[in-house]
Image (cartoon, rainbow, N blue to C red; front, side, top):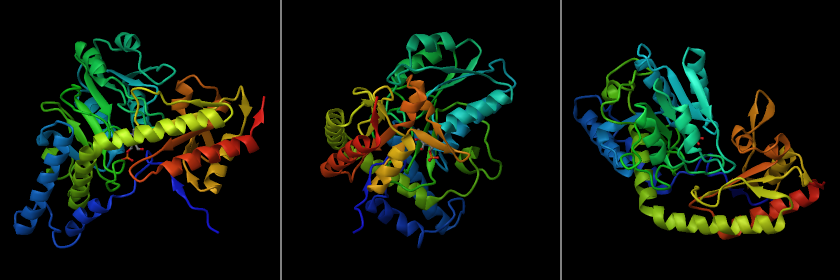
Length: 388
Ligand SMILES: Cc1ncc(COP(=O)(O)O)c(C=O)c1O
């Protein structure tokens, strides 16, 4: 008999909401025009494009003219960092600040800028993944151009106080970018209240299609485009806009914002249930996700190597064999498993970092699935682990 699979990797991606698919279908079919064309086909596409831009803007408190559509979170992050850096490369600000728990799209973009002559400071986080305001204050200088700090962390769920961070950054006259890919339309995120200058978002984390995202660019901010071509997206991002994906993104955002309150409450209950079950039944389990100021849908857990010896790879393979789809604390890089930089940043040793499981749940997750996944983890650790 085939094992019933349980998907607990909503942070990696979410299934497309059927209502989103329905909203997109006409734009693959009858309404196929190029939004830049002046004839009626083009005008229809353009109307859908601008209506969608308005919805996305509304979902984060922005003006629609401040929303630039991109191919996703990775492009938005790269555009924020390179766009600001290149536009300012002849000025006296030459210093960038990021945190040690950024997504690779920010981390590697910042590394690339450091190689091309920018000075880079990476601030650390505390044992729950929070930025220390005093450390950040010390890191931001008079010559700092841009600070990029992730809003909600994709591995552990920690939500930074981005308003406080923005105030620290702006006091020195620098710009503030936040990667809001995991927070947008899931928890409160308002660009005006949080006073951010740039923010990255993407559709496929909120039951929208893959391959579409946006960068919020506060009015008046200079950005050098990464690509060169036509004048789409107010000369910021050339290329024919994918109207079906953009319509899907807007629909997904609208649904997610509408459900945010009830969904958050439900996910918090599931999270608390899983946390309790794991702490009671899984030997050596230590949570990496804070129990406050965190995304409701992530529970990241390590098996403490000081208590239990267990191979991280075996842990994930066994979870998969038992039908539970989760992410591990390692990323596959050039064929070998590298311990997650986020879990290491919390101060965990390599063995503990590798023995990490990220459960992330969402709209279609049930209580029974949460209980089953926690019990499967308990069984695997009991079988494959060796008590120290
Ligand atoms: C925090 C964060 N930033 C950026 C990205 C990249 O987004 P995309 O997959 O849309 O390129 C992801 C996706 O994993 C993410 O979780």
